Length: 222
Image 1 (cartoon, rainbow, N blue to C red):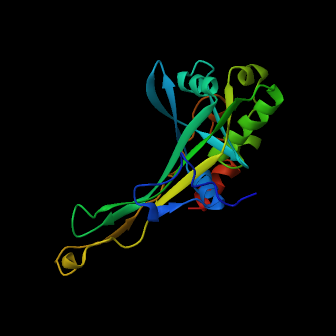
Image 2: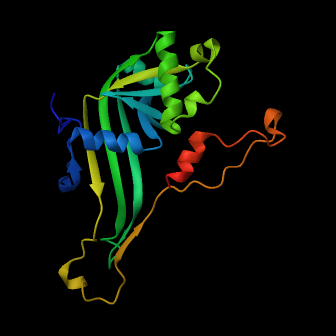
Image 3: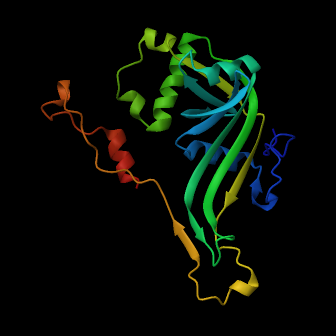
């Protein structure tokens, strides 16, 4: 199997192609690190984009939502989807506004869509979603009920072609700007998780339920 997922007729990067990357492992790493994705569909003749959670397994990207979700229904009906993810890595501040930009890693992918119908497979994938948000969490929470599984639509998107686009490092100031007395450089950014705030209802009311291992690992990893 090729290590490249593009360029293809849909995924070829035409604007600033030097920033493009079609390597499968690079693309998968960005998808896996992104906390959410955006899915596009045609609803009542108009383009609609929604944010949602995702989980990847091999060349399959899983999405989930309510069976009444218009965008999910639209991509299932059409049989194909376009999904994008973006990681915001900071600011790239040049000596001019024109050359200033952000540091980012992004992916746009295209693929055939199918509905996951088997309840056992849906339950497995939904646990994967829980662990995609917080690794190890699925083993700490109540198992999903049969009713919850039935009330959730799970969509599989086969990653047929994709492209990554990345911007990082020093700014691209033209030579004539280099001697200007204007600060230029990069300002890194990252998601930072704060102190956990416990619920105070039910069994949590007396404060005896400890912070779970999944949350501790998350905080220790920062």
